[in-house]
Image (cartoon, rainbow, N blue to C red):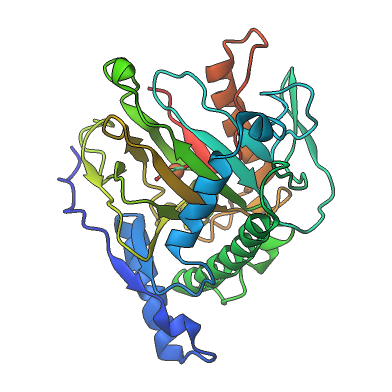
Length: 349
Ligand SMILES: O=C(O)CCC(=O)C(=O)O
Ligand SMILES: [Fe+2]
């Protein structure tokens, strides 16, 4: 028998002190222990006063701008699995797919640095280059593209700072995880959950995004005020459908959560918590912008708690998970295989 679920109210961690040019040891150790407590209990927290150039309103406006582009402009950069004439396998656009448990279109970009290609088979039909360069819809205004790249760079820097605070919380030197970030392939994803139309309201999927854990180290998420994000506070008596708590929009905040890799690195101390997004009320679109903080494809991720852990190469980890998901969608007949970046692992219902 498991113990009863904790009362989940997500903590708010104020990062204002990170914006000063020098931080005292006390400030850093205070933040480190707040993150540690949040990640060992709920696995989720809100971050406020984050050191970013763009506001959350600016960031969600970028998503509105991108998804308002003509369908043909978005499909011009659709991943090859959705448009076989295209050469991009991992970065770019994915259209909303009919699915019993989720409905969303998305656009994904990685770092702007040039990385050596890594061609890995996902399935007999599909090869993925996790180190692929970015590709943008032809009609996306140049300032929007520049803002997306700035945002990716700043979120990478912020996440790296959080990782060094977690290193100390786990009893390691602050730079312990620096080698993990060599050729890091973090993904910035823009998401649009289209509104249900009246005629579809009863047949529409229950979730906009099905229950899942994220595959990387950490996820930093901007969401609009629509609501629907829910976090699983505990799995009691093996009831994996139970104990969901809303994680509503908090103005000016970023939701941060632990991904599978950080769970592994911490020897299971940090909770890679399952979460999901409920379908919005009829007629409401929802937009969100998660940033999946990921190591390099070649990085071997090991538990700091287990010297015998041989570890897992991140590229293999993420492709293994994706192949499971793709088969789930593919039906095994070489049909349209939905391939999104390594941020999300859907848990088949
Ligand atoms: O849209 C959201 O609020 C959450 C999205 C998410 O969890 C994901 O893409 O992994
Ligand atoms: Fe997620």
